[in-house]
Figure 1 (cartoon, one colour):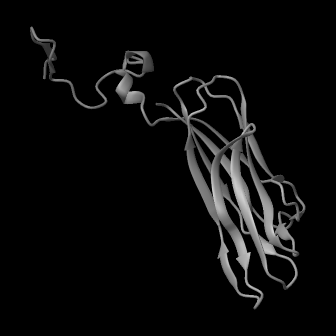
Figure 2 (spheres, rainbow, N blue to C red; figure 1 turned 180 degrees about the horizontal axis):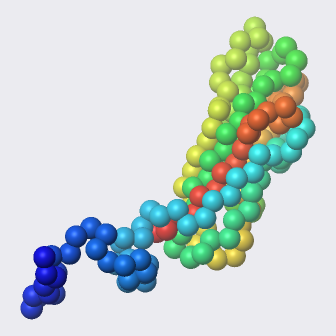
Length: 174
């Protein structure tokens, strides 16, 4: 079948895969075609040891990663996966947050809670937030935690986990 271009710019007779590789490059596509595309990915699995939290101020848990966005319009999808537990047997409550550099972008209360009876009431397994850093400079995302009440410690255990606690950053075209 012959390829025909009519007076309005429509093309007929072209089948899928009918153009040689490299004929159309990303710059030829409409900008809306690029939306939602993953441009960059960074994953960090934290330190290979347990981090114990007893601070009443937010402190680093060891889960952090840095990414350099390719465009100021990019979004960064931040996913933190972990399974904290409370050391000891008493009542305790812990809060968590995700920060971009030093700016809080996600807050959770509680990430772990245990009654005096020893029963857990909450323990997050993951957190996710879509951020708009509006920069092409490198940005660091961290997961932090604090002890809100109680005397027992929050244990962020990293040792012995295969692909265990992690922070994943995906740069999304916007």
